[in-house]
Amino acid sequence: MLNADSKVDFAKEILALKKAKKAIILAHYYQEPAIQDIADFVGDSLALSKQAASTNADIIVFAGVHFMAETAKILNPTKKVLLPDLAAGCSLAESCSASDFAAFKKLHPNHVCITYINCSAQVKALSDIICTSSNAKKIVESIPLNTPIIFAPDRNLGKYLMHETGRDILLWDGACIVHEAFSFQKLIVLHLLHPNAKIIAHPESETDVLKVAHFVGSTKAMLDFVKNDACTEFLIATEVGIIHQMMHDVPHKTFIPVPAKEDNTCACSECAFMKVNTMEKLYNCLLNETPEIVLSDELIQKAILPLNKMLALSN
Ligand code: 13P
Ligand code: SF4
Image (cartoon, rainbow, N blue to C red; front, side, top):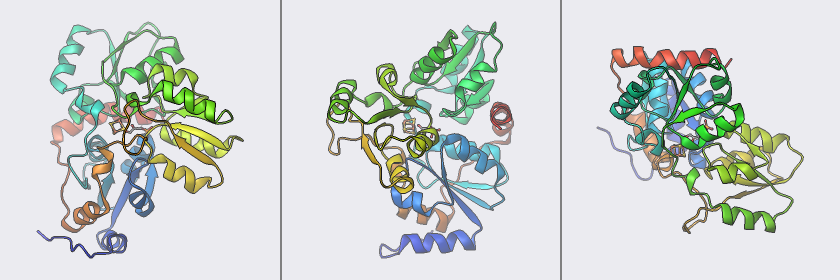
């Protein structure tokens, strides 16, 4: 296997390899700034899924976490899908094993299973319909009122959906380690220091944070909000990587990350899973065409059904 030379200009080499191999780089907003800058497309989970489904590139390099790269493979199974580091997991996906989820479903056979896209391909295959933070409310509202719903694996997004739709939903008890770490007390103190700032939060955050937020939405919706709102100062309750795009799109505005409960070195919230990807790993991954996401045809055929249902409702 070829190895990367440590003196390599990664940005230049990645662009050359990308062109030579007819590859596309899809990146989530939580990736490090250099990766966002070199990507062909940066987006939230829904937009990235749509890009993955429609690309005619030969290779999809997914600069995100494992469940996102798996989703790309399910939606475009004839393409080679690469993830710079297979260790890029997700606490939500890990909280919900396929065997536990299957057993939970068995206890509630009349329920429709709406599953957040942050889950494994195996859990997707057991689900009736997938959602992302962009379309979750719409997906819940698509289920007839008399049909009971299971929502997995994020209990915070699930509670938010119960509040937004007025539906009683059976929740899986999972959470995002980044979004549940925000300190409500520190947020209130920060807002006292910046009384004109608007609080904007991702729905994976805990209920107390969501209750005081001026706006709640997916990463893309948060980005659109800071661009379109007249306010010039925002307290950001999501992974800190998104601030790179916010500063790029509206450089004259101020973005302050909401601090975590535990003091950490940067006093901001980084997703350690998202940050295992680096420019060097991205380069090596394109160079060697590994690590590759490999899923069985049988799994793909099952997992694509609830994903396609979501996409049909998301146009
Ligand atoms: P969205 O980008 O879809 O809002 O999701 C956030 C997230 O936590 C991805 O892991
Ligand atoms: Fe998973 Fe949370 Fe990281 Fe998103 S931010 S990948 S939900 S652990």
